[in-house]
Length: 81
Image (tube, rainbow, N blue to C red; front, side, top):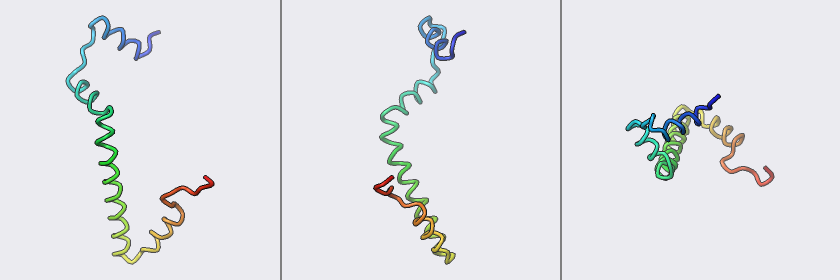
């Protein structure tokens, strides 16, 4: 029985399958250039959400929840881990 990847390989080799424009664009975007763009983008999104949560907790007077979270889950792993 053929696996999906074997079928696609056979279909492309025999010209039974032509990639759509979506596959051509997305296949190229999410390679190395996608990593170069997305890694910093999601780091900025993560930092923005983290700051918004901290600001919201401080505004509600529940900053001790943030401090407890930071104590339980530090940003940098300990040296023994």
